[in-house]
Image 1 (tube, rainbow, N blue to C red):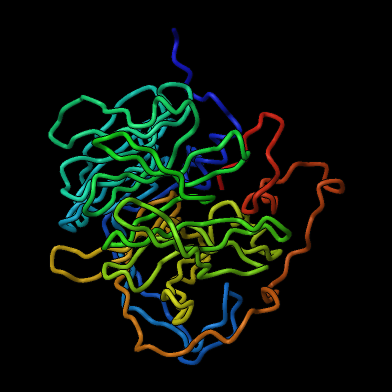
Image 2 (image 1 turned 45 degrees about the horizontal axis):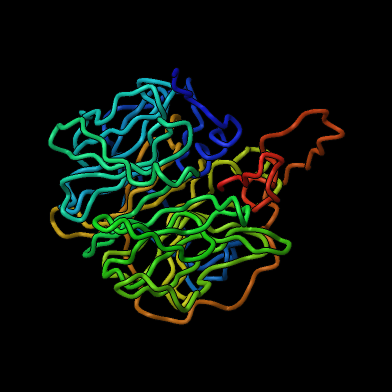
Length: 401
């Protein structure tokens, strides 16, 4: 039977753009070399539209480029437990994304998968000896595990579920793996977890892109509202040793923004995430498809800090420690053309109350007139539907934003 590369074309296209950034961009330019780039900030806080209002501005030293793709793009970074290696999806050699690995400071890359199917969203196991990822080799998205020792053996984890499963994440100390799966009964994406030894399956509620906290006691994820506006926001739940979920808590939300791609700080006191807004300028430059900026916030919804402020979109942040034990935040950006992986060193403030309430909306700096589809006569990819949770399409599947 001939394998299907893209069983659900529209679904994969949106999934690739939103969950992995794999927009299959074929042409672009880049610059090799790993140069650093300074980003300046105003010394005093200037009102800026974010999910919440912050009390002070933020500065960091440099932004460092970690991958150097000149065609295609690199997406979905994850960091090895020892802090020395990156694993990520890339379309550098093929239009279909595959999994690669490299050192954080080196330039050479090692290709870990080589197939005719899309393979995305890798993450390392806690012992650093294997990695999990999402693959559509069976016609739908499944979670698989492979070892890093060169073995080609693939361990399918969710092939018996007959649905789409994406975004895997290992429990830090126990044999559980958590992921998102599409519930055909509810017509929504839900969080599920599977025991790697017994096969026990648990469902933890609605949500996308779950991430275990460093101690395994919480899961961060994004969830959309069920009423208008249907933007995604960042949530956490508490889980016990058997992964019974309690205390669903919304940490960051806004009626004018989507907050997506949450990830934990090494000590579990902060979350890093990306935002997407609906300003006319963002739609005109199509940034609504790719993300805007990287932020951090503590678990009380305070100390909200904006980390990036460039003209290019940033998304998919991951927070880890390097080999020297220093914090580093890796993220995807198009600062030099093609999407590559960059990093910065965060400097966290002393605790202070920074949340002052919701903001009314984004300021119109150099506003660009909105273009309606009926007037322009085209279906613009900058549609605001991208980062909201639309009703399930006729196929019964919702778009995994």
